[in-house]
Length: 324
Image (cartoon, rainbow, N blue to C red; front, side, top):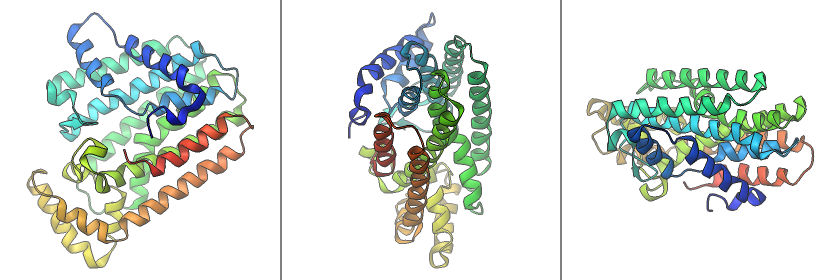
């Protein structure tokens, strides 16, 4: 499924948003332009701007106003990826060299900061203070989520609740407010924007769980990085947490994870992945992702009827069935 295939009538508007993304990071500094463009040209699903535009369909749709929400949200997401790659010491993303790998950590950090700043410059054009309050609060929560992930590197004692709180902050909140702020910017009523938030939140939770599953079950060609990268970096994800609850494989899996930690990720993770796949960790994670999608669809059904509901439903199903 190609990136825009599921977005129906939004294709033209999304092409416009894509052009605005490139314009938004153009500046006077040659190197910052180069590093930012490198990240943007790597592509992505652009789910956040799509959700903004779809949220706008539930109010007075105005692309010129909505772009000042859609572009900043995608830039914030992009900036967080640059910083993530530094923290995770990741060499590739989506099959391309990361900014930190092609240049260095310092350049990558300042590139992320630059992209954040460009996002805020664009969002500043919006007069509604509610949008700024929601956006700034989400950015604070994202930062906390990143800190919690660092704190929990190689923490094999963490429970499911702790993991879910972390991905809520790291991933789900930004997707949730993308849906919500599109409606707010389009002056939809509060009930509608709140239901869109609930839809986006639950889809966002499922999206991150599926990301964690793909890291273990996908191929390098599909996910743009070597399988098991999360484990190499010390990120203990939901399938691993569930697998560690299986008494038959807990001890050998702990030994594998300990070996990965001692060698700073420079070791074969094939054995660990094989054990996780042999456990119920994968199926339990899939079941939880499906439950989140169901909650999202329940919120969707309570929204006013329009053609956008089908698009949102298609995206929800795409999230848990995607292979990239």
